Amino acid sequence: MRLSRWLRHYDIDRLDQRDPEWIDLVYRALHGPMERYFRSEVSGIERIPAGPALFVGNHNALAMTPDSLLFGFAVYRERGLRDLPYALGHEHVIRLPIVNQVVVPMGVIRAGHRHATELFARGHKVLVYPGSDYDAMRPWRDRDTIRFAGRQGYVRLALTAGVPIVPVIAAGAQQTLVILSDGQQVARALGFDRLFRLKAWPIALALPWGLLIAPLPFIPWPSRILIEVLQPIRFDRGGPEAAADAGYVTECASQVEQAMQACLTRLAARRLA
Image (cartoon, rainbow, N blue to C red; front, side, top):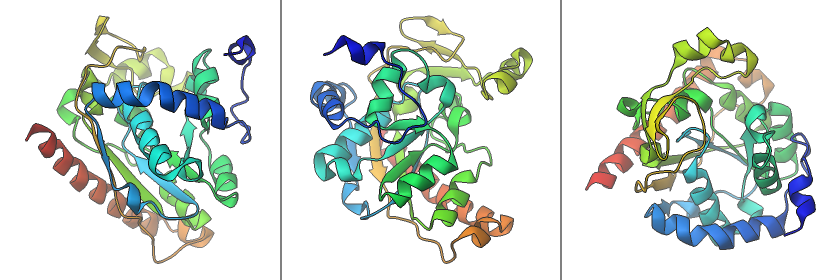
């Protein structure tokens, strides 16, 4: 591995930095250990449509998101690089040293409709987690709940671009730690909602810290993770006019989130069977 890779800071707004050799290296190094550690199963890969699409997932485990890698490994193995999505990431996270050098060459870019629309135009797929920090930092009692906090930008993006939404649901990844509180009041009191666009600041039990009071990296507990790709959702209307219709956007968002919640409930029950 060349030292220059780790000294380089990748531009989080460039769309031409995905490195197939790096992706293949990460896959070969990590897919086996991670799939065994989490006893993971990924189903529904055959439902992924040809052409551009917006994968919509539930966000888990702070910024660790082991389910993101497990889903990517399954897509890469079964469908290759052409269907492996680019991912929209939080700018403050993907700028961090080491994180930047690892994830940007894998296809993570700054979250934004402009970037996603350009990727769709090039025929690519994009992965987004609408719930962001609200979802990833949801407390233990809500571990099997889809929590998008009313965010509907993903629907407006899909309608404007005319691409289907493909829900990707993961159960078990939020159980790799125990989040006691999402710390929304802490985030507001410290001004993190204004400074870093973080609406939550978790208080959790996690390895090796014991008590964790920040979204820091941690050692995930080997929770069983089940992931399912649902059938693509295509809406009756599309284009900027549909995206500007608040009532229609809410209707579409409700359809997506209800389908995702039903799947998460089913997968959560199956984990315990």
